[in-house]
Image 1 (tube, rainbow, N blue to C red):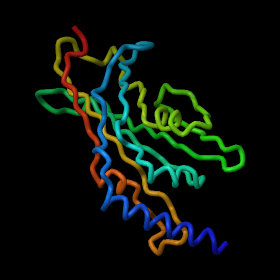
Image 2 (image 1 turned 45 degrees about the vertical axis):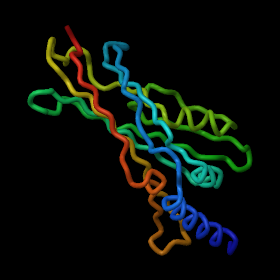
Image 3 (image 1 turned 45 degrees about the horizontal axis):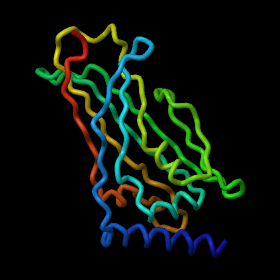
Length: 186
C-alpha cells in the first residue's frame, strides 16, 4: 500500500516537471473532414502530438484516462449554435492481460477496441469519428462553422492532497481547437 502512495506522488511530480521541461511539439487537431453517412453529417479528425512519453506511465498504471471532444456547428454569419456534441474516449490498461481497452461514447461511430500496442492505442484514442447532425437539418447554400476542441480530463491520485491531477498539464494547459468554414449542402 505504501508503495502505491509513493508511486502516485512520483507520478504527480513527474507530470509537473514534464510541463516545465518538455520540448514536445504543441498538441494540435487535424482540420476536420466531413462526410454524409447514414443521412448524418459525420465529422472526423485526429490529435497530433497529444500523448507525450511522460503520459505513458499514467496509461501503464491502469488509471483510466478520459479524452473529451467538443464538436459544434454554427451558422457563419449569426454564430447561432445549430448543434453541439460532446464525445468521450476512455482508455484503461489491464495490468494482468497487458492490454489497452478503448471505449467510445454513444455519439462516436467507433466500436470499442483492444490492443497491446501503445502506439496503436494512442492512434485510436486520439481519433474522432462522430455523427453531428441529421443532413435534413442543414440549410442549403448556408455557410457554417464546424469547430472541434479536445480536453484531457483530470485523474484521481489518492496520494495527492487535492486528489485530482490535471492531465492538461501535459498539453501546457492549451486546448487544441480547429475550425472549418464550409457550405455543407448545395
